[in-house]
Length: 194
Image 1 (cartoon, rainbow, N blue to C red):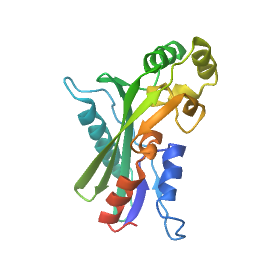
Image 2: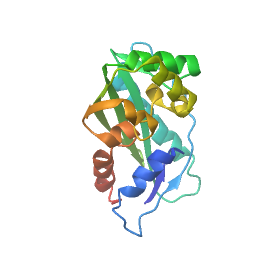
Image 3: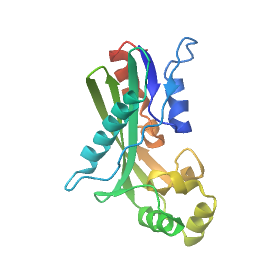
């Protein structure tokens, strides 16, 4: 089987590379699936993130033309505050609004990871609680000016400058970064890929 990551995220690529614990024979290709990420009416955040991970894995499999037995890994991460999904910001004003909403509160980061092999797609969901310190307007202005929030769910990256705002986490750090390592390893091991 040939492992394929259905993502061009440098963070997910780096995390996936770590899963083999330095084995020289572990490798994977990358594809960039394009799916509609619009939530369905009445869809819960948990159902939404799991559906997107599965759809990314399946769309990625469709991009593996001529590849023998592709096993395609898809993943999606969302930030949820009071049952509202906080996606990537549409502009700087939106990023500031989201960061203000997260200030001093605990939110949930959900990452679903899916492995599409043949006709089967297995999905795992991981949830982590993240508590932000209280942010000043100056903190938010400086962080948004760095441009880091602009391509991140919830308008922050824990592995970058946004980590300065994280007071505590309960759960998987790698889930918050974008690929839960333990659960991803379990999926790959079940398919004989690690």
